[in-house]
Length: 143
Image (tube, rainbow, N blue to C red):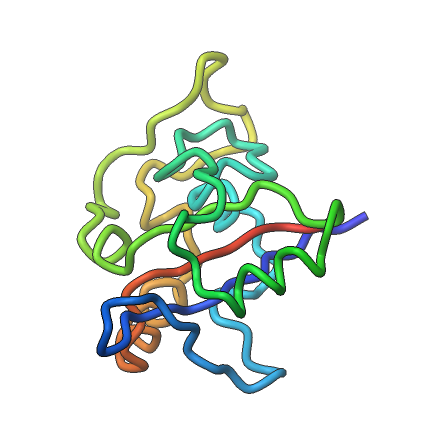
C-alpha cells in the first residue's frame, strides 16, 4: 500500500491569523509520491535512515480552521501531522552531508548530500510556493 502526503499552504491574514491559501483541487504542492521527500520532511517512509529536517510536530496550535477541518475529516487515516515554515525549507543547507539515524546509512542509499537525496523539482516547487505568499506548510500522510 502506498503513502501520500497532504500539504496545505498557509499565510497570515490582516489580523495575524493563519488562513489557508486555496489551491486548485488537482494542484498538490509537494504532493508527488516521492518517499525521499517524506523522509526529509518528517522521517516518514525513511528507508535510508536519514535524519529529517524535523520529526512530526503535530498540527500547529494556530492552524487555520479549514486545514483543521480537513485533518479532522481524514480521521485515523491521517498520520504524522506536522508543519514547517517556508523559511525553514528555503534556508536549509541542502549541500550539507546527509546525517543518518542510530543504525546508520542503509546500504541502498548512495547519495551524499540532501540535494542529491531530493529530486530536482523540490527546490523549484518551494520557490513556486513562495510566489503564492505562503509562509507555512501544514501536512500529514496517509496509507
